[in-house]
Length: 275
Image (cartoon, rainbow, N blue to C red; front, side, top):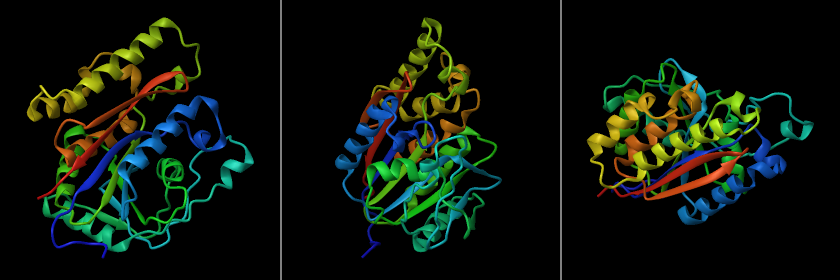
C-alpha cells in the first residue's frame, strides 16, 4: 500500500544540486556533491514516493505536477550534446499530487496543479544520482514567485499534514548561488564571504540551543545574515530550504558541508515522525 491511515514517518532533505547537468557529466568539481548525495540516499533508504521543491520552478501560486509521466525539461544551455540526452523516466504520482494540494488548501493557501509540467534539472539531476533506477514515483511542487520566506515556511508547515507512508521530501537548491563568483578567481574576500554565510546557515539549521521561534525568525530574516546577498543575489536557490524547515519544524539531524565548484555548500536532513 502506498498510503497509510496513520501519518507515517518521512525524511526531509535540502540538497545543493550543483551547476546544471555538470554533476552527471563527470565534472571533478562536483564529485564531493555526488558522493554526498549517494550517502544521503543510503541513509534515507528507498522511499515509496518523492516530493521535490526545486529552485527552478517559480509560479504565481504553489503549483503541483499531476501528470502520470511528466518527462524532462532540459532547462539549461551551452552544454555538450550528452547533457540533452540524459534520461530519468520516473513516473509521476497523481494521488500524491492531490494529497499535496489538499494539505496546502487545508491551511488556507491557494494551490493549483499542472498536468503538463516536465521535471526540471533541479529534480532529475539529484534524483539520477540518488536513485538511478528511476523506479520511484515523483511529484514536483513549485516555489511562489514572490519568494517570501515566511510564506514558504507556511507551505512546509502545511505539508506536515501529508498522509503518505515512507515519503521523501527534497528541497533542491544551492546554499551558495552567486553565478559571477563561480567564474571569478577564488580570492580571499570571496572565500571569506562564502564561508561566513554558510557557517551562519549551518548554525541556524543545526544549533539545538535555538528555540524554533528563533530558528524560524533567522530564516525569515536571512538577508541580515553575514554576506547573505553576496551569496544569494537572488534567493531562489535558498528558499527550498524554508519549505523543508517548515515541514520538519526542528533542528536538522544531519549537516553535510561540501566543496562544489570551489565553494563551500551545505545540505541538511531531517527524519520526521508524525504520531
